[in-house]
Amino acid sequence: MLITASPKFFTRSSIDCTGSSSEVRVFRGAIVEVSNPGRFFDTTDMVDQEFNRGNKTDHSGSNRQVSGDPGLPNAAETPAPTPTPNPTPTAVYIQQSSEPKKYRKVSILPLVFLIFFEVCGGPFGAEDTVRAAGPLLALIGFLVVPLVWSIPEALITAELSTMFPENGGYVVWVSAALGQYWGFQQGWMKWISGVIDNALYPVLFLDYLKLVIPVFSHGYSRTLAIIILTAGLTFMNYRGLTIVGWTAVFLGVACMVPFAVMGFVSIPKLEPSRWLVVNLRNIKWSLYLNTLFWNLHYWDSISTLVGEVQNPKKTLPKALLYAVILVICSYFFPLLAATGAVPLNRDAWTDGYLADAARTIGGSWLCWWVQGAAALSSMGMFLAEMSSDSFQLLGMGDRGMLPEIFSKRSSHGTPVLGILFSASGVILLSWLEFDDIVAAENFLYCFGMFLEIVAFLVLRIKHPDLDRPYKIPIGKVGSVFMCVPPTVLMCVVLAFSSVKVLVVSLIAVVIGLVLQPGLLYVKKRGWVKFSTSTSLPDLRFRVYADENSESLTP
Image (tube, rainbow, N blue to C red; front, top):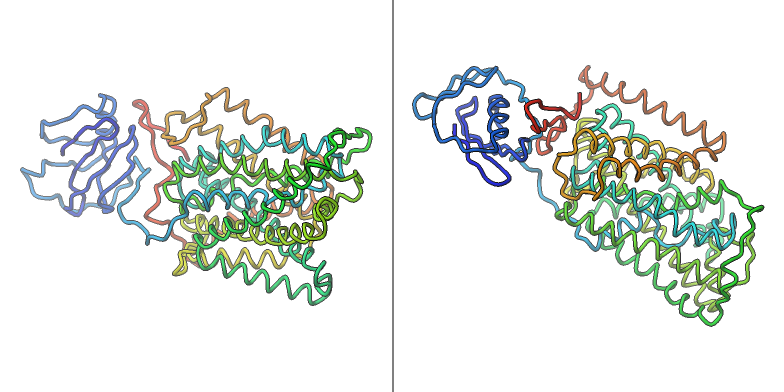
């Protein structure tokens, strides 16, 4: 056996149980790549010794016995060993050489706009903040909440997504830190939350379309239109993520141009005193906080398809930074123009009021333009959300948390069953009212975010030396303090939930708690095939920080 050293890696060549050569690359004490995915001997003790000696090169060529192994003779002196039963490797964060079929990856510009549509898609839906609390608190909310919520969530997403650059995202993070049971619960709650959220967008699209074609306002024609629209957008997701990404770029530009025009047209009509209006005795806190929270979350959704991103360890942090800036600007400046140029009538600030404000500011042509942008925004948000939801199910299938069929891809590289499940959920939930949709998905999303924050802190505190291509430049104490404001905000949002939303959400949580053991029973009985992708690293990897190794999962 020959150990060769390099500044970051040392490589061990050996003979596996089948007589073939294999190569294991060790990064900071953890095995990260095996050139031959065949069976190999347990060499943890030797790796520990070499790593603890500072990666010194061993050129002795002498025979070495490995604790617990049947012995590994010098290949130059003796023939290949007789095959033995396949032992369980002890260093198991392994990237094997067999790779899945290559598909086109998403570059940074489409990635920015996918994040943009995951989170907001423009200022549409922000009107209720003015109705609930007035112009001043609405404007302050879209500046303060990103600081205490959006930026911490985006930073956590950047660190953990580059640490685990694969589809499944937050499901993988929680599984690595807390075990697969809680990883499944995370996936279940986030998927339900995402599907509930996506059920809103066909409804919003038709709400704008009915202003032009009144027949879509109610009845069978409206139901049929929802089904047709969902089917059409679902087919676009089926055709490929790169198509969805570049479509998001086009839709994003088309959504924001009319508000840029409205901003310039509004300048002569601005009255700064209108921005300062507030009545602390007349604030609907539940509506205000839920609307802010709904408009500024879902930063972590992009993590579920990070396996489809070009060079995610560098691309994703940059894309999240650009998207944060874009999202804040897309809310703040249109609200600044509309509230400053139009006399205040709080009761009129409901969904779609920005189009009325555009008519007051620039005329009917600008109103129609904003309404068209709102319809396109609904399409963009639907496409982005369905991509995230479906690739999450694919990632869970790759990890063996769901039946193998969920990991199957179309010829375009898209998760067929994940798309069908997500589309079916959208159609079934499209009958819900807007306020119920927002409150229910916020509630479930908060549960999932609690698990994400716990996973982030566990990995930071217990495993600070794990490789993090992007690391938030704060220590353990700073990490804890960074997580306090978003945790408090989530508690406040949950506290304002109605009894109806509480009951429905808790039922969904209980279903997830029972569903995972049920799937394990089905797997044990062999009724449905489950499998884990051989191209993914085992999450139960060990960190050789000292003589005692640790495992991320029990």
